[in-house]
View 1 (cartoon, each protein chain N blue to C red):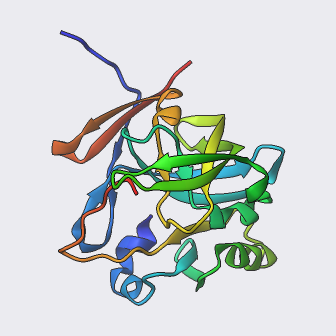
View 2 (cartoon, each protein chain N blue to C red; view 1 turned 180 degrees about the vertical axis):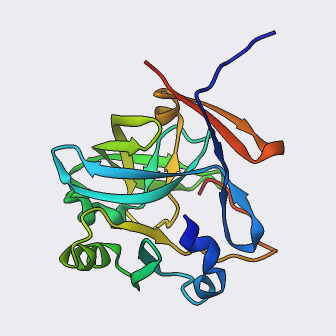
Amino acid sequence: MAWRRAHEQELGNLVGQWVIVEGDDLIAHGPDPGALVAAARVRGIRVPYVFFVEPFGDDIAKLGF
Amino acid sequence: MVTVAYHHEIPYAHDVNGRHYPRLTLTLANLGDPEQAIDLDAYLDSGAERSLFDGTLAPALGIDLLAGQLIRLQSPTGHALPARLHPVRIAHALLGSFAIEVAFSTGHIGRNLLGRDFFSLVQVGFRESRLALYVTALP
């Protein structure tokens, strides 16, 4: 998703939160993805793109879960 | 020599810190109500027996999380992660759409995984040296 690449610094402030992005716009962020999706649909976004911002750093490597 | 042909090459997704991951952006929809759908990212995990999605997303799909069959997913640490099975529709721009039963965690996990159940529907090749996936929807 292009937004994520273009806003890496902003993502650092959103660690631990769910985020909804539509095109170039950050629509909403917070702890409850269900509430965020509902808010996005009220704004007319029929199928919102939602993702969780995981902690990141040079000392972190991801496994499946 | 074994040769496998693929229809699509998909670059790994770029993530923060300049890292790249085999991750697809999908549409996940309620099988009985296609209007209840979200776009999300899921990591391809050939070690996962089941596809797994964060259960806190279930309400956004109109899914009653705890109504699904209980399953325990065993992690490398030996701890079992409880999850519930639900039928959904997964759609991808290049691969089409599939009805599939997946697991939703009963707690927050943050990272969605596509496991071997998804791999039974899609031929997937990894080319780590090129940070690329090769995929073909199976007939």
